Length: 156
Image (cartoon, rainbow, N blue to C red; front, side, top):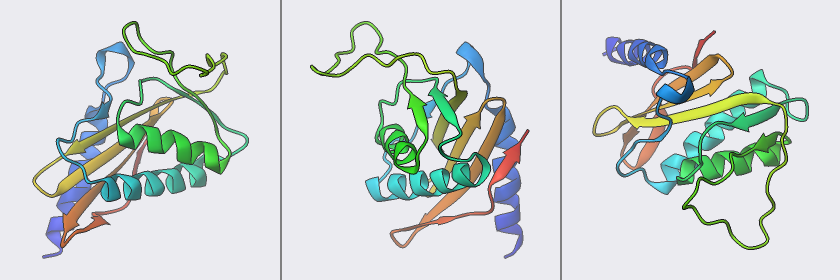
């Protein structure tokens, strides 16, 4: 019984090492159906962990992908609420920008990327890359609740 969580944590750590960086990697939300409550809980957990490692008001993040999913949009909002400066990429050609939206000015900052993936029918993995480091955590959904399936794994 105790082996299952340990195996999942080790799997999450292994998968964190598989995330590539640069233009060759794919980032974003790859879950087919992620309930909004689960997404919000994962965002809160992610922001809490980032806050413990990177002090707000002293850290600037430069998002390296378009936040086209609810997780990404919520993550950016929560980071800004905590006091982080977050620069979003400019919309790609073909994407519309709402009237009145200002074009973000260049802000030097630490690169930030995220991946949300589904490992099984009720298992999810969140990986956040901050610069060259990655943070990963697995989650399990059971009885309409999402619970962490281990500790955060940090790869430097």
